[in-house]
Image 1 (cartoon, one colour):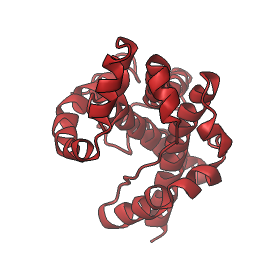
Image 2 (cartoon, helix red, strand yellow):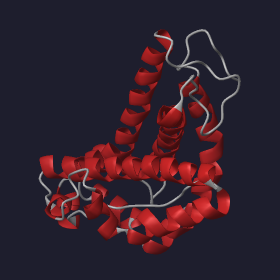
Image 3 (spheres, rainbow, N blue to C red):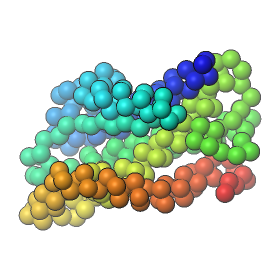
Length: 233
């Protein structure tokens, strides 16, 4: 029971921070590029309350329910934007959209740096095998024994969020990439297509279909950067 509660806390801490960092990046980028919609509701910060209030179901109920039923967490969050601004400045809208998954990549690289430094100083060791919550290992006691698990979950979760959100499907951030190269009226037509509600829902199934084959090699690539000279297959 104690172990399960500890894993719940570690998972939810990593999940909450990852999602908030993702959405705050959307909001902050939009603010810098001329749209204060999300910032006006407090989402251009790491304050969890602003993000939880907007998506209570996706940020609290579904993550906890998925952990209790399956041992891992899924969920969602969102940051509002001005659709008029998006159509007027499609390139800025694309930059705002891509800033979310790029924020997840930043967290992956942060953990990578921490582990590389820790491994070089003998704080962390390379595990014999790796799993979602066992990418990092070390000889810790007490509360510090949870640090490798937390870093493992944070690392694995943000690789997953980065890959999934970069898929070029309408419901995901990666679908906004073409807006860098389209100008009105082509960008307007493209936005009409990807913002079609029925079309967006229809892409959920192919999103999960394409996710696995792309996620596995990307995850393995980053894992094999953690420990110089150690290769996982």
